[in-house]
Image 1 (cartoon, one colour):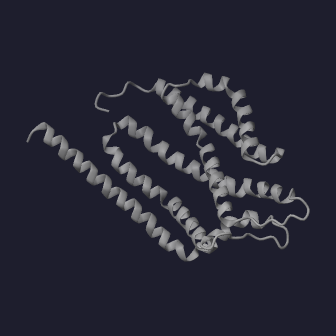
Image 2 (tube, rainbow, N blue to C red; image 1 turned 90 degrees about the vertical axis):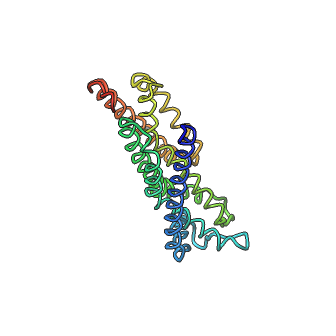
Length: 252
């Protein structure tokens, strides 16, 4: 067998394995989705609770399209199904990628994947329980007199998804900081020197993504700053451990 034909067969085997793992991931998400489907309306009500609880007496949400009351709860069930299945999806991704990594790359990649996933979940949880009550409380309290609050359920879902993404990505700050140091793009000293700019930037982001009140802005800015400090702390320990470790074995 020639070297070229061997490479082709190896490539095909990788494609077959990738397809197999993708199928497993999709089946897992779909299975969870089917389990959640009977509770789709309840899940949407739970998702809308931060807004519903802040509405004045008589306030309610509306559906402006004919099919919206059916499809929007299904979208919520699909989103939650994906989030619940994400660890298994990442496990399948790791199973495909891991054999091609060196030992030291595995030691770095696996903790980063687990940590980034957990931080994303924490960001979404923080947004739901800490940010949404303040945001919706501010919005409903500033409505002009005579204006009845009737938010469309699909637009609300879009707003919530954007906020989840914003806070989920914001909570990835420690991972980004550690990666920048690990890859040699920045040093811990440079990150510490940039602290004051990061604090200002965090409050600017808070002003952009939250209503114009001090509490809501602080609610985003302070966690961003603390997560940045956490990233610096972890990165400094990674650098210290790297400088004290013996030289890696050629086989690693």
